[in-house]
Length: 229
Length: 265
Length: 43
Image (tube, rainbow over all chains, first blue to last red):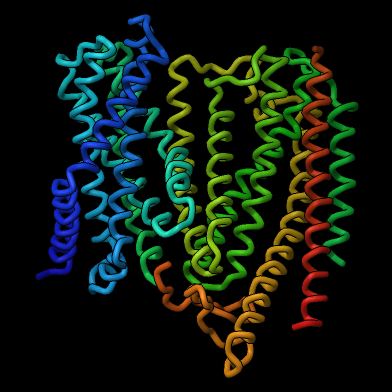
């Protein structure tokens, strides 16, 4: 088996393990989804009741909800490893560290996609936004944003996994880094929903894709230093 | 002693540049006296970004060479970087209020980028504070510094695109003094302030580096003291051993130091 | 508030901050070096 195939299968195995754990321990997944929905609801209370203001703000609120809930998700995929010294066990296997990172980032992205599947319709309902006509582009935007956020979040979850005050350090470190992702995703979403009057959608999607590539490389490249003891 | 001379020269240069910028250089035609703030503002911003680069590079140095001196450079540069970043933002705000009427302008890419830079720096320093083992701390910091450095160009482009299509520089733009065809006195004032601040930065970096080395040595002396109490058979400071808390540290004169495996906390 | 006030505030905080940070640095340096000296006596 070539090295690449083995790394990929390791990554998939880790992603599968975490996914199964999530599905079995349903509670954590359901809590995260509920939290995300709550965030959107609270935004409604904070910025409403004027429907026009909410409709204008909808893309931003969607992505803020995704980001806040996403922080919880990526944090948890690393936290499970601190129980029973699981992380050390993982590193004892002769696997490329990048596979561990890839597996965790993949499951993180998947979690974000699930969150997106919940929050996009919720946004449509709560903030009276018509999403149906822009669904393909919206889906693409969510996919690109999910990958980028998972790439960054997984990396920093690895950094903070055994630190004191990690619950606050993870958001504190992640949020500045994903500012450009947030900005681009909101702009792209907004453009998609309004029919892209200025033709800026391709540029924003390219920025998102570029962010994803850069962060995946940076995360994979440096994750190994964190896990090696 | 050379450092002391550098410090005195830097101090004189800053004073001279300040007097020049405040009293000798004429006021700008469009922005008025407020334009004078640009000199320390741009100088601070330049040093904020320079410090950031130094921190990132020093982090790479640690990851490759495992010499804690690199990490000392990194933390020194980061702390100084926070200071200059704060100055840059303050200067930007003090300029924006008289010229644009508001303290903060979301459409100004430099202001928003520098604000993010400040957030990244603060996160970096807080992360360091929460790590006790020097090698672990250095690795975490290096890695975080690297990813942050990689993020900055993306931030730069994203906030510029964010501003949209209406971005023609006007008479009220901060970009004006960076224009090479600006009148000579302005250029002189800017270059003078840049040079003076850079000298000050260099002096600060040296001193902060010395402080980092001294603090590291003190940390290791404290560990050494504990080790000596815990086990008589421990040899001199070059031996590595376990502390009661299970936190394992590499000892040594603070130069070559690779942390051995650390037990889970 | 006139422009001049903002200029003074700008320069004042930046230069004053630089001076304050420099002074703080020197003080921290002196303190650590003193700690080590007295600590080594006990060492």
